[in-house]
Length: 482
Image (tube, rainbow, N blue to C red; front, side, top):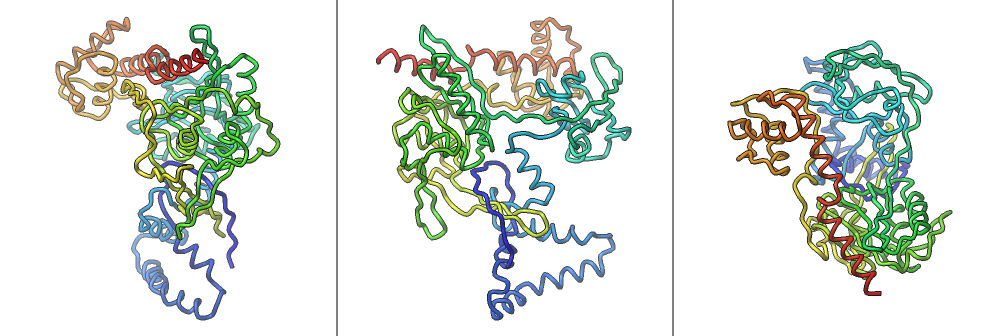
């Protein structure tokens, strides 16, 4: 019988769907001769197809490609975007995304119109120390050009063992020159919690942002909240906007730090409809400040808050422990378990529904906020790196993206459909003039860089964050009434 390593995860994302059928069949192998015969009969047609393809296909095929394709095909049939088959490499990458650290050079890279562009180096990372800059175009990795390879392959070539080096050549558009770098790979810490004190009319509010519920998030939460209390925090503002989810144990520990022991913070419902309560319990090796049980709490969420983020919002809302501000959350009410296969890959399968303490299933509906506050479009728009140039009478998604940002910044383009007309050209000219740049009459690299910086500056100005302002105002009012 096949053994499977399971780990429960509240992960949100495009998690394709997979070899569930294969896993169930393999799990059943050997249980009885009758079942083995039945399984053999069911899957003989798959063996037939395999033989037909390998014997007659004019295109050369690798055996593993057919097997991987079959696994992914079974996944697609399930029709669940959160169940998926991951290859050995994909499984390792997914695990790394939730881990506390990773090895590399610490640079975010994107692919735009066939070019690989540095979005930004991570602060304090080897790439920042070496001098890589946003908008540098990656040309070579260890002497080999990057044309024709995938983003996945680019990332794979750059990553490596700690202490080894990678040689990069980039084209720097600002200077019009190529620049060479030799960067030593190192451990890049992955921080999922950030915090600071916000002072509002004599009151100290502890702000704590959760970007996801990773392997070390509970430990980071404990350290961050302890520091906030030392700095005099009187209330807590938890920001899970854009948080896609993560590990069950992480959200359980964080929710438990604010709730009495033995409190049901969610339920798990299996395929038979049986409910299992998830109960708060003391976290292993972590001691949380008792003030977390009593201070006023507001949780900030938006449509990008999903899965584990919704578990936290739902628990605090249902139990009357926190007030939810923002917009309705994403609405992911299923839980996935990962099961390791003999080929090194993994099946990630939706095995349970999760319900709030009041037994609400929020799938596709989300958790409605207690106080609805909408934001400027700039806060939900993904800010992209664009290296191409566009002019009047052209039509492109990049132009539509620029029109959306310009409109959100207060410039009248008259349209957001991606057609570069005279009105759009006038808006570009006015924007560039306001930013103290000469307009070329086109959307060129200088324009796109300036637009991205302007949008980032707008989002970083707390005066523009209506949701944050309302959350702070609510907490200030709560403290003033004490």
